[in-house]
Amino acid sequence: MRSLTRILCALLLLLATAPAVLAAARGETRRGELWVTFPAGRERAGQAFLEQAERDLVRLGRELGQGPGAIEIGLAEDFAEMKRLAPPGRAPPSWAAGLAFPRERLLLLRLDARVEGLDGLERILSHELAHLCLARATRLRPLPRWFHEGFAVYAAGEFSFGRAATLAHAALSGRLFSLEALVDSFPEDPAQAELAYAESIDFVGYLLGTQGRPAFQRLIGLLGEGWALPDALEEAYDASLAGLERRWRTDLERRATWIPLLTGAGAVWALVAALMGAVFLRRRRARRLALLMRGAGAEPADDEPPPPLSPWSP
Image (cartoon, rainbow, N blue to C red; front, top):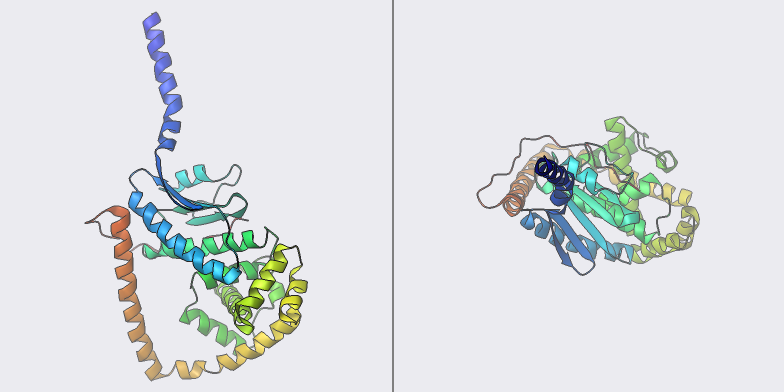
């Protein structure tokens, strides 16, 4: 009887500690202040995303004028693991493919995310890194939604011909949102949300191009010192937010007049050829990442629909 009791206690102890043992079965790769943790058997994925994150951080440092310091990137096999890796009380939504937690200097990426090709995970990593770096550079100060999303989309290179056309048609028809309308949130309607993203990235790009990186870096530095955005903009650009928005709209309307030329028959065929080349390069890049993540001989899945844009968690 005593032996049976001991066996039962041992089994209960094993069951209680099994989750901790499984949770500890994670690998890690590190370079400087950047490190990536990954599920057992995902060493190649960890190395691939570490190398991409290094490249992204160099570029983001040039744009912002400073680096974010130490960053951890946690690769999760599925939603359950992503939820476990998230900070206490900060559970991600079930559909999230990537999340940034700037306060904790943590970025989570879900390896089973249903994205448009495996290179979609690379875009999500770039997008979330931009959110994290901008938040750290501005000392976690609250910023308008258009600023955060505009910079993240710009940094991840997610501006497309479709977004450019959406933006141009809205500009020519007088249907642009005011920046004030995009401070707290974006519209829920997909078409209106797409326009909000297009405006945000174009205005951030305008700020970066108006007086180059020095002015933008000055803006980021002032925000990090606690300046309000309107005051920081006026100091860095010698113009009010309203004045910059008026100038941007004028510039956008001028650029938008080229849309009829870009939608002519000849331009359409040129665009088709360019898109075919882009698809080829994209699939080759996705296959390369698939081999790194899944091992030689594995075929990447390319028939799964993309998820909604991953959210940023402040």
